[in-house]
Length: 197
Figure 1 (cartoon, helix red, strand yellow):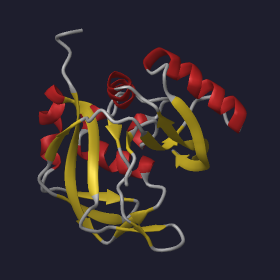
Figure 2: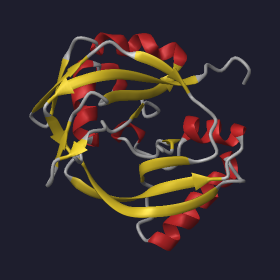
Figure 3: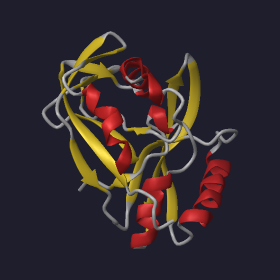
Figure 4: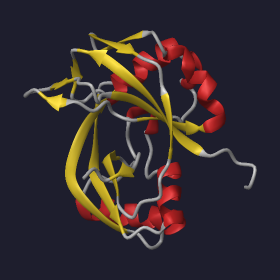
């Protein structure tokens, strides 16, 4: 375990007009079109791009918009070819800039925009399944579901929840950020980040 590479966030600034609000699957598809070797790597995490809601199903990009990968530090070189490229995200053109590397920070509260756990769609059962997964990596965490979400993956509607974790120790916080909860990391699910003030 001592030889394990640290997990980091590789953040590419992006420029463009907009992307769909629900763009996890199409963003992954666009990235894997240029980086074919991530197609079979289920541990690659790709965060949804942040932006400003324009109403309807459109998210406007701004100066703070980033394409962020959660990966092991020794995998950075695999993703550098994206710099200078343009992604086609459901018909929207997104230009990718030069990335920055960010280390994970241990914080007491973490938030995931969407968590999906196969076979669990109802709130009570989903929360219990979330707590069972946390027993392994963060037994001291207090989990709560903030919002039910549906996302499109390969034409299918998948149910998930926005999840808040509080009361994490430093070790638990890093473990949750490294491991996540549930599946579909490549599509932006199960990835936790510090709660924005």
